[in-house]
Image 1: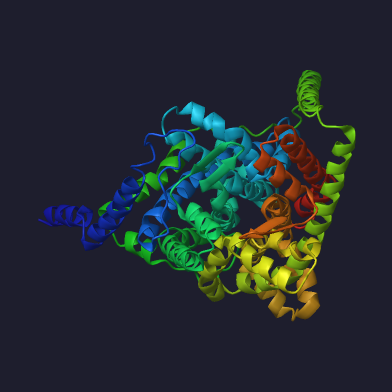
Image 2: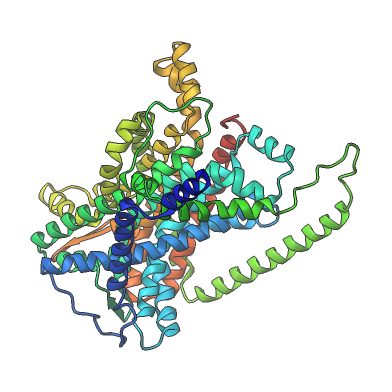
Length: 578
């Protein structure tokens, strides 16, 4: 009798409950909405045609917002896959790391207009007669505004894993695959989640350029909030711009509740600390799925699948005492020399092709392009210093207070997602009204959309400081500058460096749209490499575009190599949670 009762009880527990119904309806509604929004993405496309004709009627904004969210979601999935593969190889591969890290520096410095100028025609040719080619180009453009920040964050986390975690993985004989999924990836989750939020929010900054594409004679406009904003700016319709901002705020609040708030609460379990935090982030979506029976069990089985797969893998054999590890070193050195020689040959070939392509430009103009780069670099350096002085104290204050983090999170996402080019008209009016110098007063526009990289990374770094270290500092009576010097600055230093590196690359990138601002017939231009690349892109002057992008990449790579990389090494060797 008791056996039947126990069997009946297990059957009852496995049956769906009301929470299952609510969760199923939520998931079904999201899937149906995405399917409805993507139905026109493969429509017929004729080059040169505006597809479809946009309207500034606010009734169309929900559909436009859905199309933009679908593109950003697809770009985020690609960015996450890129981050897990590229960031891991850059951090762990001895042969690939010297190539991948500088390449990532170059990629984050290439302006989004530079990617669009060389990829739009290719994607259109890849999907002939279909709008999917233009959609793919737009998604790829948004991907380029998201992926580099996430990859840098993951790379930095893998390089600063506490030594005790690495020693424990070695002691238990974990294989490379097991070590990655059980130790390294979990450790990298909290800062990666914050950088995902920053990447999505930062993607809004370039959504106008990615949906209203103009490269030479190719002009394509896709339905979305970005193209809606571009049309509103072109027609000087402030009412339409206000409707677009209201829609953006609603969309950000919605995906914060449905996606980011559950993600932050889930990432909390991967924090490395000995004592429990006082206040843990909460999410009604996680609570909903936790109370389900059928869906909760299915998600638990799916979540346990990677661990079960890694359990079947053979563990790594620990080397015996006195075992010679130098076997095979001559062969390895030969392979390294061959690898380096092949890489040098490819690099020289690429430089030769680049030189041939831009050889039509007079040498004097080439030197002037380097001079324009110096002007932009001076603006970037000053802006990064000012932004750090402002946002580091604010980010640390927010990150140390979980209650504030929960409240400020959606506000920070909206501010980071706010398209800074909507402020450009106001900047033009003020500069003209007060007769200000455009060379100086257009500079702050460059960092309006990229300063948030610093804030989000500082918040992530401050929230990752173990609670036991905070309690120890409080018990020792540390306060003021002494607290900052001994705990806070060392604790956030790796994340701050990541934020500065990505903000630096993003500010260089933003110079394309910030050094040339217009409102109606009035256009203000600041001397710099960004304004030059914007002018050449509009003219379709590909040799000058390639030269400008190459010079910008050269500046960014040199700065990263000789300045930021040293700070990375300092973060990896001195400021670790060991």
